[in-house]
Length: 103
Image 1 (cartoon, helix red, strand yellow):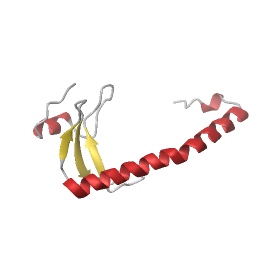
Image 2 (cartoon, rainbow, N blue to C red; image 1 turned 90 degrees about the vertical axis):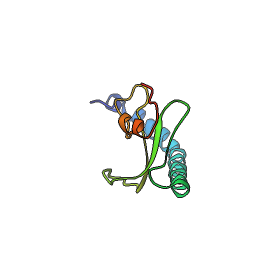
Image 3 (cartoon, rainbow, N blue to C red; image 1 turned 45 degrees about the horizontal axis):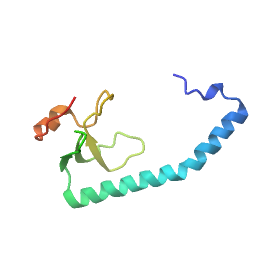
C-alpha cells in the first residue's frame, strides 16, 4: 500500500516533514492529556466501569492486555463507530452491560 510520499520530490518531502514536525508537539500534548484523563477515570471509577455517549458509542474502562508495542497499562475500550469494521468493545459485550447499540 502506498503512503503517497514516494511521489514527492525531495523539497516537497522535506517541507512535509517540517510541517509534521511543527504539529508533533501539539499532537503529543493531546495524547498526554488523553492518558491523564484515562488515568483519572480509572482512579475515580475503577476497572470495568462503563458508559454510553450521546452518539451511542459504549465505553468500558479496562487494564490493557499488552498487545501493543507502545504499551499503555490503562485503556478505554469502545464499540465501533459508523464506518469502522469493529471497535475494541464488542456489541455483544455492550448489550450484556445493558446498552442498546446503534448500528
